[in-house]
Image (cartoon, rainbow, N blue to C red; front, top):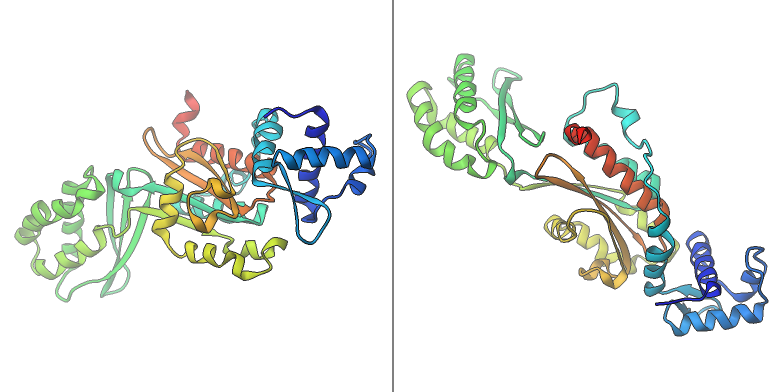
Length: 343
């Protein structure tokens, strides 16, 4: 769609103004803008043309105009994307540089920071653990009758699971079990752990562990994964601080959607790699069709990616949000896959 210079100026000014104020913009207000050297009558004509092109729309309660979904799409494609320069904002690097953090802690911290910086709902989708392999197993006694199993995967995912030590199982038995597990399970794909446990590990425990049956069931419960991906969400209530969502009914479907992890995972995995902006009805999920969803991916290793997402009103600060997502994606890639920097 081709727009005149006047139309571009008026459209960009209206959207910038509306994003800041959440109030419809009228010709009188625009005529007072020193950057727009046009009369109110001329501005009204330009606004009428933009409305005819479905880039602006009227509200029922005001004579002013607000951007349409089509208007926001034009804004992102023509006013932001071509001029956006890659910035390296330090969002989390300065926090973690002097400390050792596990992957989960880094991702959780990133989700919280992103939510706080934007006041939108932040979601980070971790790696699909079914594509990973087991890297290490540790079992650490906590008390006389409890222990914690620590599982580390090839993607850096760390899982802690507590369990009760069956009566009669000695510390020496736990050491033997750890040796058996690391000998037989390291390098095994997560999705194949159950089979490996029930065949190779079971027979070895039967041979070397006294109360092997009880202990095997405990080991099986902590080794086998009950979820394929990790999902981190922060700022669930942030939408309620936005003026257009003071009416809770408008976001009821969205909050119901946030309770369905599988639906969130499917939504984010549908976007592929790179940066994507979906506005309003461009989103396939009904609960997000009156919102904007921006996603960006980060690299965990040569094959795997994670996904960062922000969900907010269509009246979103797109320039700020896109810069933040790009910067955080680069940071997470540099932290979690430092080999990528050598290329």
